Image (cartoon, rainbow, N blue to C red; front, side, top):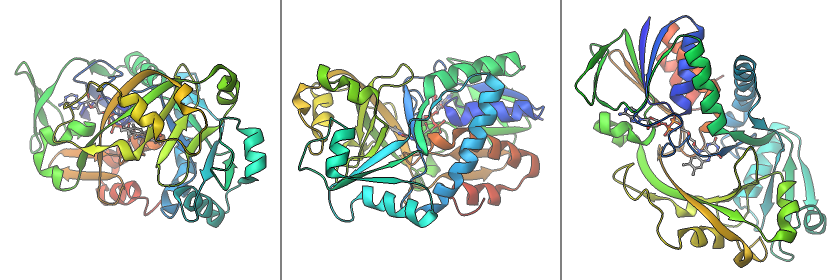
Length: 367
Ligand SMILES: Cc1cc2nc3c(=O)[nH]c(=O)nc-3n(C[C@H](O)[C@H](O)[C@H](O)COP(=O)(O)OP(=O)(O)OC[C@H]3O[C@@H](n4cnc5c(N)ncnc54)[C@H](O)[C@@H]3O)c2cc1C
């Protein structure tokens, strides 16, 4: 089959990988370069973790996610996963860290719980008296997104896929499986798959009833010299407890120490709006992390990266079929870890036509 894929974040790249492997003739079209630094998949690293709180279906689906990444590593000949595990720090009864712990315990997944004294010994960046306990899970780490994109791209070129970079799709004709690019050229196929991230509503405005676009930013920091070793050796910090909705990636795979918080995101009418960080934005994000981190004012901001992404109202993943076009959005702020698995599932759907099954899987309602 001849298949056009619109958008080369992890969704488009992994779908192109899987369809090319299955023998299809794939054209992958990206409006920027690959990886595109403005895409949700364009940053240095993203977290993979088993913890999903009450949304246990996604916790179970992590086994498939790992298995799909393993298939990808075998194909590209290199592993871009740093399996350093993760911790969560609980500051209040019932906070998100506790929900993650309870979800893992319910699922029977292994964790180690450290009281405050033990956690302070292990993680020297934490501040005494600001938290109740921490727990560690070995099932998690950092995926190195830029390297993954670069190597899938190389694999696609080596295996005969057509790649069009700096090429914007301006219209999709779902009934005829054709698309139009910015210079007016029309490209015909048997199927079109749209994995356009936060830009999807430019092509299909009606989808904004299902997907809301947000703008956020993350901050890269240089820690005080005496805490550097603690960060270098640290697991990923999935949650810093309380209401911060904050996560931290330690330096890994060429990416530096990075802080991000769900509190910083805000709705935006366009994925292209406000993409230059404002003065002081990095410090604002950094300061959300006290408590439970100590001496935050001594962490120097080295970079701030903005991001645009979409959420469904229940933070699950989304797909819809229109004629010969399949639109897929595995995001809601947590889709990267499933990237390779999403590509394989979308490719299977193109083969078997079972879009309802794909939708259920994307919503973690089946396996
Ligand atoms: C700050 C932040 C932190 C996150 N943390 C995590 C995490 O720790 N773990 C995790 O699992 N997930 C995380 N996520 C979510 C994850 O990044 C996304 O789920 C995932 O990257 C989405 O990939 P995508 O391919 O669907 O979209 P994108 O990566 O946004 O890719 C879409 C691509 O389509 C291109 N495109 C759009 N329109 C057109 C067009 N008309 N023509 C041509 N090309 C087009 C864009 O340029 C872009 O390259 C995070 C997201 C953000 C923003």
